[in-house]
Length: 429
Image (cartoon, rainbow, N blue to C red):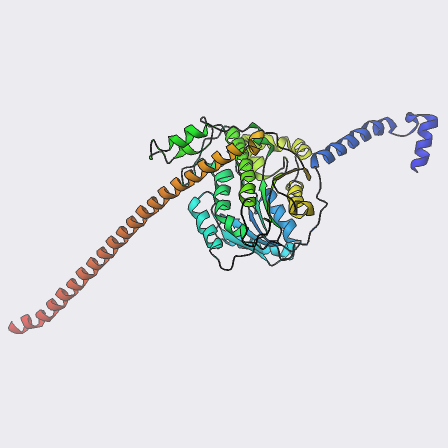
């Protein structure tokens, strides 16, 4: 049939075929649309690896790209440990875990309660993990947790006083890995250990502050919760803070690779932990939707109106997860010095030289470490005060209860005495 139509077009012209000119106009458009969609979908992971018995710790693994990364690894047999802010007894979360186990045919999917906006919560979990003897197996850490304040939104802070975007995107990861570092270094030399950081191309717009002035600022006043020592822009702009948080995270990732590589193992074997930075590209994740809608109802209406465009130029969360899966399973990244930067399932180079600058890496680490120490100290003092207040309130409540019981007993005694005296009065009459 196609041969006959083609022959008729050749000998009699396009007009000889019914709707010939319409088809001639529509087909190139459909082909162009298909090619555009194929281009924007990005690369697909072509690597496979036996993930059975591998223990993978994941942050941000319940939504967006992180959820698809978890599904991809769990379906291949990996043991998943989700770090989640949600209470583990939440019935909706319990159903989510049960459904995930059924979908992936994998019962080795568990969760731990860790609030990444709380330095104290991170320390409680990480310290418990590190203090285990013998050291617990840990093959991979995937850091997908991410947040961004919508354009035009106001700055919010964590319970420790950090700006939310900076606190979750950078400080939480710094604090978590700083404590888990001994657990990574304690893994056997034949184990392929990977730490995968989720990055974003917006890091190119990030700016580092003057670390020297930031470090000196924290000694001027303790009443400002040491926010002077936090590297962030002076004027709050959501996009700038987000870009800086990603730039800092990538810089810390390279510094953390050197931190691991410089460790001298007791068995004299080379370090087997490698850092991989992944840029998944622009995807239709909840975070991206929040960004495009400006966090407003009118923005949501505009987003729905422009949905065909977003469908065309943005990846799905599954397509965004492909480079993460590639980083987790590609054999070549289990060798070498680490510190790889991947985009579209291939290795690429950084566009900002600060990321590989050892002086900046050292200053960022020192400032971040001193900030965490200061904030944790203040948090401990605050919790101690709150605990004392709770104890005082409890003691006051107990004393009031005892006093009420004593008054009740006294009333009962007086009532009993009055009832005994009543018959005597009747006899005297």
